[in-house]
Structures are given as C-alpha cells and as structure tokens.
Image (cartoon, rainbow, N blue to C red; front, side):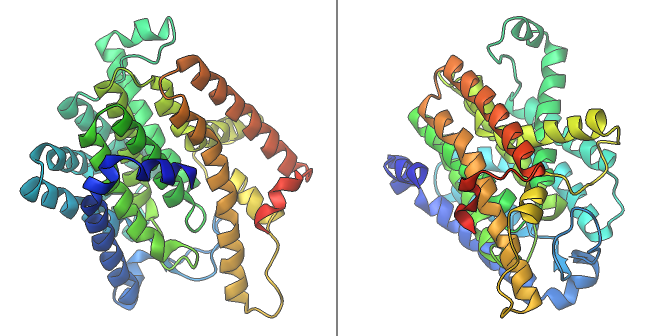
Length: 381
C-alpha cells in the first residue's frame, strides 16, 4: 500500500492513467470471454493433469490467461502509438514483438502439453536476443569489480543478458503455483520499476510499466481468489520476460539507477529459482528441470495453511486454502522491493539488502521444513 501511495503522488499517475485503464479493461474483457466460453476450448486449453507434485487445484482450469494480458498490452500500445506519444507506444510495441517467440511457444505448450522445457527456454532466449539487439538492452555493468570488466566484452555481455532475461522469465513460471501469486508479484515489481522510472525522469518507461501493470491487473481479477483461469506457461513467460526487459532498460537508460535495484526488485523469483536449482542438483542429486512439491510456496500451502471450516464444500475449501497461500509470498517479495525503491541509487545498501533477503529466505524455508514456524506466519490464517 505504501508503494501504491508513493506512485499515486507522481504526475505520471494522473497524466497517463488512461494507458493503465485501457490495458486493464481489454485484458479484463478478453479473459472474461475465455472464462465464460471455457466449454468451447477446454479440451485443449485446460489443465486436466491434477496429479503432479506441483498441482494444487481440484478442477480442470484454462491455462491460457496470457492471451488476455498480451492483447491488453498490444492494444494499449497501439492506442498510445496512434493517439498519444509515439515514442511511448513504440517502446510497448517493440517489447511485445520481441516477446512473441517466448509467449507463443509457451502458449503452444499450454494447448498441446508437448513442448519441452529446453524448447521453451530456447524460444525465450531468442526473445531476449531480439530485445537486446533492437533496444540495445544489454547488461554491461553490475558494479562488481572483475565482473564489470568481463561484461565490457561484447560476447560475454550478450550471453549474460540472454541468460538473465531467460532466467527471470523461467523464474516466473516456477513461482506460478497458486492463485494470484505470480501476477501480484509481477504487479508489485512493476509499481517499483515505474516509480523509479518516474523519479529518474523517464516517463516513456514509466508509461510502459503502467500498461503492463494494467493488463496483468485485468487477468488478476479472474485469477484471484477463485482461480477461474491460469497464466499458463505463455502468460508466465510473457510477464517474466517483460519485467526482465523493463528492469534492464531502466538501468541502461538511466545511469543514476543502480544495477542492484533491478536485482533486488526481482529478488524473490530470482532466488527461488537459484535455490531450487541448488536444492535439486546439489542437495538432492536430482535433475533441476523436473517438477517437485518442495518450492517455498508449496511448503507454505502444505504446512502453514489449514483446511477451511467443515461447513464449506470440498471445492470451496480447496480454493480458499489456495488463495490464503499467496499473500505470504507477496509479503516476502515486498520485503525486497521496499528497500529497493528507497535506496535505488545506492549500490552498497541494495547489496546489503540483497544479502539480507537471501539469508531471510533460507532461514524461513528451513523453519517451515522443520515445522519451526515463526509466529508472524499466522498473520493470514
């Protein structure tokens, strides 16, 4: 709420709310149509596999929510391009065009269930290469001696950028396990990026953040709390890709913004992914690409959230428990985002908070695994 209040004080909020509102309603209506006419496409769009270790829903639900988000962003970008500032709409259209390989291959997986992880990652890497080439969105510095020297070499900068964007896009797919989780984490990050873009005098990037924020918000209405539609791989890759690109562009276009702001504002999905790889590969000796039920959000669901009252139906109790899980992770993500927007220019402070976040995450994860649940985790029960 503090972040929303700070953003509302910006002139960009009052001057360009039409971008957010238009994207919101396009996404809202398209997603409503997908939900309302589910019976026409459920054979190909719904997730009928309810037995996987990472599956926590009890009914088949459409996995094509990314369509509403994509169209909301696209049409808002076209409106901005034709009717308002050309440079602002042009950036949006460039981003959604570059996102097409990642989004379409992810969407193809949602409807066919036959696209492997490697193929999806390659498609996302292609999108990352496109945005780097056409928008000059390369990571050339993270203000760490030695690494910055390496990033000064063009080939290494390209590889690092492609891995970074692909990794964050995949990270959003990993955290997309509960109603409203990935979409709200994305909106929190977008508010922070947009706010800092305004503070850095970059209204073009701030307006773009508003458009993406509005489109995700239109989807969120139907995803939380009841889970009437899911992001799917296409939607998760899309929002993760766009947030990664906007984070890089903010730093690349505004030298006053520390590169560590981009890292800290995305700390939760990034560290969740890195921790998952370490846990599966090193600790368990398993393939890190295989799904499991030991993500932090999965443990919170299983060990902290209790079933609803017996008076409720089984289906109602299930979605209520699912919906109670996400706010824990919203809070966790916000703990990294708030210091990021306060000290967005001060690298050493951001580095300190990044380290503190990693330590806090591991401590909390370990506490939940061992059932030593901190008392404040009962806040949302």
